[in-house]
Length: 215
Image (cartoon, rainbow, N blue to C red; front, side):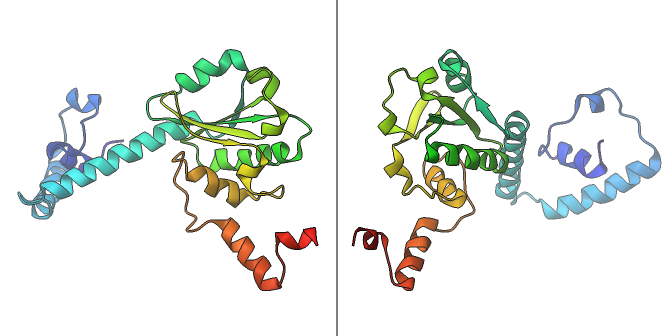
């Protein structure tokens, strides 16, 4: 529903007027008086020298609207085949990041990534997460190159992660996968540093590292 505040923002050119406003210009004297008071307050806030503030506000609102649009579109993992590729990847939408996991049932790390995928899809609903069995997506794709993740935007490959070595270890944690994929630009993470570094630091502190397994 429209509010007095929104009406004033429309008059200032900050918001676009809903269509129904154009067809209904009536309001009682009390509402008009309140709007005048709010408008005066807004005039004091946004004077002629505040164009930058208004422009920043408008850009923020546009970004919020864009993210809201994406959130309505995704939020889950979609299973695809080769026939779905063009529609799901190339036609995902302008500026939409698509993260494709190519996997094979029975490979432990592939299964682990698929589990993490569900959580990431919910956390970053403005990014499109899809997965496909290798034989149904890329015929003759070598098993040794699995798992494989491809990151696309506007139909172009932005980043690719091929093989288990790209993910560090077979005990890949959710936050580690989140950090890895965030470096491709697919989404913005709230993690401040690479969790894998923290894990390695913990191992060193405890007095052992991966090379100890070879002794």
